[in-house]
Length: 153
Image 1 (cartoon, rainbow, N blue to C red):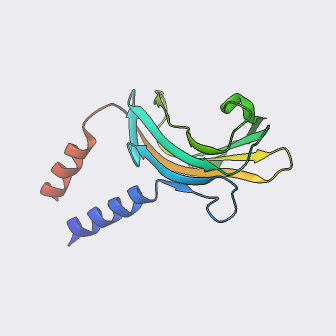
Image 2 (image 1 turned 90 degrees about the horizontal axis):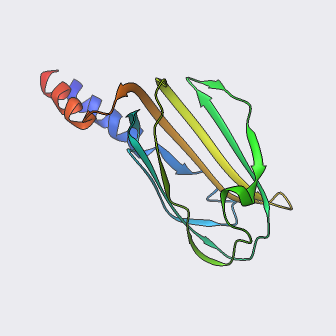
Image 3 (image 1 turned 90 degrees about the vertical axis):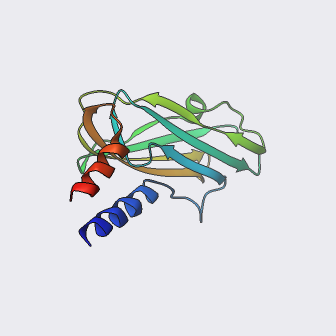
């Protein structure tokens, strides 16, 4: 029973690791959103973000706000010109904002992030929330470790 509960908890957490926090109010409509790995990342591991979205009208500029908490302690949000994060003007149609980066060393614990894009009139364009657990370990096959743990529990 404990094995099943541990697996259900893990799968529930993994499915909620990244989400569209502007689905009801944002101008841009996200058509595909995922991160890999979905919920837990190791030092030196590639973290990939798949982000595809539809833009209904031309946007000439705006701002991007990034909020981060590390082990539930909030950092001051950063705000920068939207055109630093994406090419402006943003034209109507389908867009692919997918990216990746290597996870840095020295982080261990829970990292929550939220990215909001706003136009020049402060209308919400896009909102993404992500939750990751940084293991602080070097990149290993963590799914193999989980399977081993569940077999031995």
